Length: 286
Image (cartoon, rainbow, N blue to C red; front, side, top):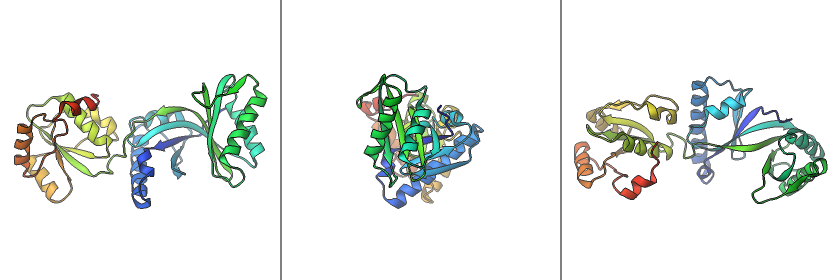
């Protein structure tokens, strides 16, 4: 029987393309965000570790971990998982059947995995686990493309992770890896348009401070690790920019005239990514 004792996270695939130093920085940022979300939802966990391009959160409340992290930028996919010890590939076969029992019973299936063990290759592991399931459950049929069920196994030297159904994460990059930007809030603004701009910036890894008019931004806090946003005056924002605490300014306006006025106000170029209708359509309204 499947008894999940952890959650396996697949971070944004772009992170794996970075050099070692940048990748380490991004994973640390992601871990910081994960901890903030778990703390907000009061989810107990014992440790968070990085393994072979994945992250594992060990907890006696893995279902709560999934729910807590669904708004965390930088996570593409989450899996309820069971971490087990094994001594041989035959032992792994036996554990695969016991864990999969009740989840994979009939219809089509496929075993997906990766072996980091020197005892067997990935291909051998997938073949052995698949054959063990078919032997115990003859009604099963292997189908590599679009199967009804998938069994995932990531095997290391003495332990392996089994998991099944994926849960979608928020995607994007970890919050803060692109620094902090100021988003100007004029006296008259469309809240949905402003939210769309801020959401898109945060999804690229930009932390946001609002500049100008104060408004209720609580709807966006779930994507900000449930932390309240800071609001700055124009003069304070300009001082922060001079000190490189803010790296750029953005505006939710949709006309060249307005963005030129805002650039004059700040004394630097203000970016307005919503200035083209095509850009507006590409940004989700939340």
